Amino acid sequence: MSAQLTSKGAARRGNSPAAFRSRLLDHLVHVHPATAVVVFAPAAVAGVWLSLGDAGGWELGGWGLVGYLAWTLSEYWGHRVVLHFEPEKGFGARLHWILHGVHHDYPQDSRRSILSPLLSVPMVGGAAYLASGPGGLPLTFGAGYAVGYLSYDLFHLYLHQGRPRNRLLRRLRELHMRHHFRDDTRGFGISAPYWDEVFGTSIARPPRPNDTRPGVGTT
Image (tube, rainbow, N blue to C red; front, side, top):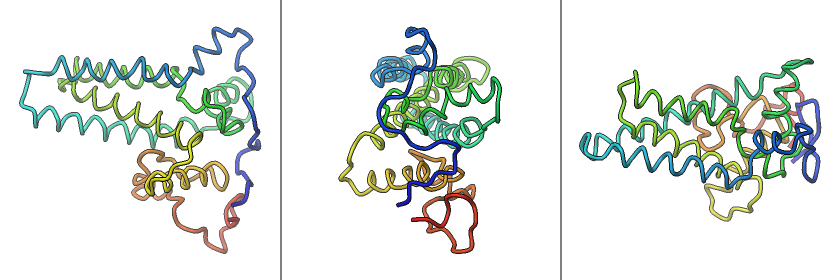
């Protein structure tokens, strides 16, 4: 596989530089992988616990599945529209680098493989609010969303740091590496690549010989 990228930078080895001069602020923006588990696993468990007795098991489980599917759509569209919106200069360009550009520049830095709390906390918190407030949904919807987010974070980390032997995980890693090293305008579903098939951004198929986009047509 070619290491050609469609992004402006190139993949670098080692750990990335700090996003801020303040070490504390940098650690608040780019967290250790264990932080996601410590924060969001209890949130998911609490959502299930507080929902017990409100409805039957099948109903609660169904809403949990709906919450999980809602996360996969957030993952796809957030990655495609938000994380890959790349202003040329100014504050927008800086913000993009902090949220996602640094991950493409340093794909093996584990602290850059976890979604920044600037995005994860509002997203999961918003789902929990809908499940407990005006949305009128069971809290298991929020729990399913939180489980989906946490699964995505850990899958994403493993695809960069691990060497999967399972056929499914090997396939997910292959697709995500194509996104990083062949064409970062496709392949936005990391834990749920089926949305790329639905929305026409699949990177699973070989590139067409006459496709002239940068980074496409090289394998």
